[in-house]
Image 1 (cartoon, one colour):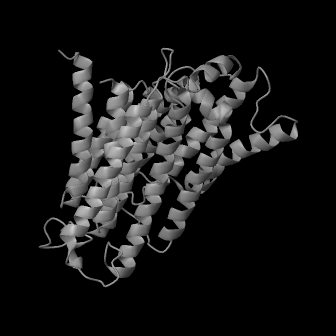
Image 2: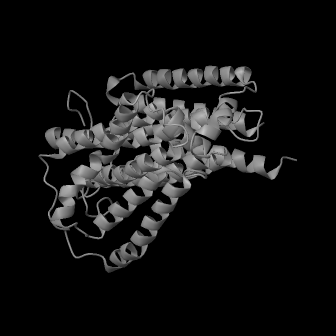
Image 3: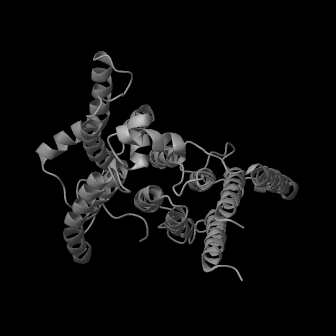
Length: 102
Length: 320
């Protein structure tokens, strides 16, 4: 199995692991982590597909896209974490559950 | 017998999946974050294995480093770890109260596995060797002004993507700053400074500044560039903050200016070039290298201060 296929499949697995936990976990910090894992999965698929070129060098366009993606991800994560802090400060709970159950 | 590199790749892929699962299903949030940081470092290795050194540099500095600091900082602010008698944070399951949690949980799990299977089958059957845009980039690289193809795509061929990316980063920082406005940051570190950390900071900060400068300069022809340089410089700023270094008042006023510097320089360049009759972010022939260098310098500096601004408290948080 070539590294391209191996890492694309890993990326797909990571995406769905993240998606599952994004739904299944209640703690917002876990949801943010899960979204990050989903993002890593997408990046992995993009970069492994970039290797399918005839020449010795991979396609630089997906690389640039992923580089942009990493910077945007950390910005979005920081904003999400700040919102989480605010929610925790206002409600005392690090979750979005409406009935206030533990 | 499998070649050693294939074995290494398989091990790396298995570790990535295991770490992601472990980080997301652990009941202890501190352990989750540490596993996630290790996941980030191993991702950087995967990027290196996939011939993407530019991304590996960015991932190591941003994905594993800064994101980890942000997460630990937030965990410290939530104070769950420090609650007396609370022990490890109990992670409740979103479906726990639904009574039929077993079936619902399994439905979501099943849907995820099914989706992953479909996507994997599609990827495996549709994977043919394609040209991609590598040939098109290689054809025009001569007039791009830089010889590193990733930098050429980021700053020249698709410069508007990067312009908007800096805009997104700036918006995120504005959002963070306005949300944080009510919560006052402690004026001084909450205790005597750790002399070891302080000495480490003094030792490392100049080295990190040097590395950032090199990455910025090397980005034109080798792996590196504005964002990697900015991430390393931002790391140096965060480290100095952790060591209790508070910038003098004059520098604090300049801080806000540095946050918008990169976006403004990039935007002004775009406007000036458009006004001069070029299309959006098309550089004058033969001068592209110079334009890109100055835009990258401003972007790198801004990225550093933007990333450092995202890390709120300048005192060690997280684990007690």
